[in-house]
Image (cartoon, rainbow, N blue to C red; front, side, top):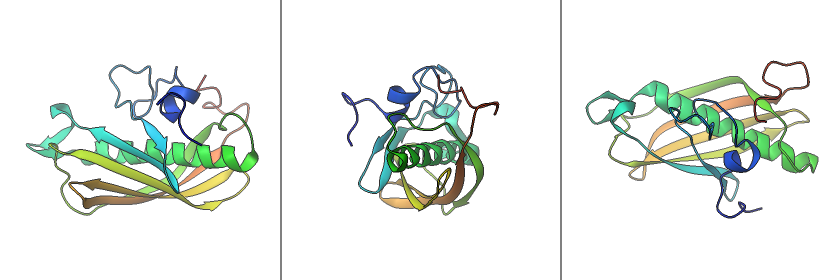
Length: 158
């Protein structure tokens, strides 16, 4: 259940991904790193100046990207575990919603937690929480679906 040699799920299962949010090989992307937690996946993200909307606060679009990609991986790992397969199915976002609760500071580590609240054969619904300095700055929910051969995103993790 734990990561392999401290690698994130993205580094293990999609090392060549170019996704802006979670692709390990996208040098200009956010390159999030999600790890298994108690009831889903967890991650920590350190922001930089380029992620700001205004001095000292993170842009809402960056928050959305972080939570979308982390939610997608939470769903993919849960589907993999449920199906008893060795690699996660390729999942895409069907829908997601983010609620910005308070300004998110740029000088803090962002902790994001994803937990599956509904799981079907090819679909997972995920709840998300983003905290900075122990305060909830954003919450969200998403629906993610596994895609099959023929979908444009099917081989994106290879």
